[in-house]
Image 1 (cartoon, rainbow, N blue to C red):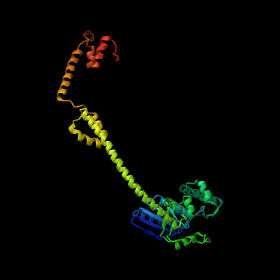
Image 2 (tube, rainbow, N blue to C red; image 1 turned 135 degrees about the horizontal axis):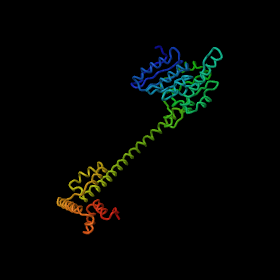
Image 3 (cartoon, rainbow, N blue to C red; image 1 turned 60 degrees about the horizontal axis):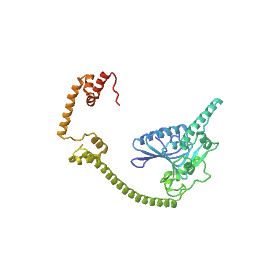
Image 4 (cartoon, rainbow, N blue to C red; image 1 turned 90 degrees about the horizontal axis):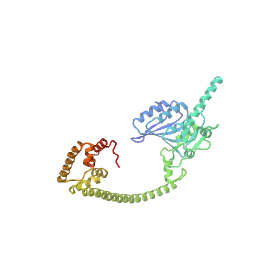
Length: 375
């Protein structure tokens, strides 16, 4: 495997791949990249893909793009120098994209060479136009623009060079980083892709300070902020954090107070429930503590349990109720044997209704010839 990229193991969870060179060459190609990625996926959860490439083969780039897109790893792109042409598409497959403050993206229409008869030339042109639409869909998904807007903005007659600030504003990237020491901006006369690749490869300091869009938003600074402004913003943030700690302490005290009040309220509810059950002779006073614990642990279940209990009755009361029930049963058996006329003449229709409404209705219909209507 003869490749231009290097693989660095940053820690037990993170590795990085330096993709520096033209895509589709003998040293930078999809087959080698995918094989390397598969090996890293087995041991690392995060992979940083560092880019400094002038682009290259669209089809080789699409294969790399899909391998990144389908990976279960958290793959982040870092544009160290140049991500031009197909390289600018590959970075869009990554979950997060960061760009050096002095790096560049370059986007343009796909190009290719063809020879042959007019039909063959037209076929090649149609293929390039189809590829252009596919690439524009990738840019559109990232930026939120329509495919037509992407074509109008980036696919003109000349190359579209995009700075880090412009890329962040266009949502092509998530954040901007820079080396701790200011790095020289390449000369304005340096516009060739290979010259820029070589410039950044040879001069870029690989120890970066990450200033993501999220961090800038929290600090309230712009990508152009100098170190003094960043330090001041950090100091302000630290002061706010100290105040937050004090407020957190107060919130904790209030939460504990509220918790205590809730416990008092729950205790009062449990006391009312249990004492009412005792007063209603549903439970005895000796079981009060037991039911208090149950009510505090699960009030609704204990309430349902106590509501379903019948008031406590002494043995004498139960015997009296039992005797009364037996007497009613004996009397009912005697009344049922009587005809409707006998019940009417003896004045016992009303008594039958008190003991058994169903039997009363049957005897009523038998004597009066109609259904009994409750008034």
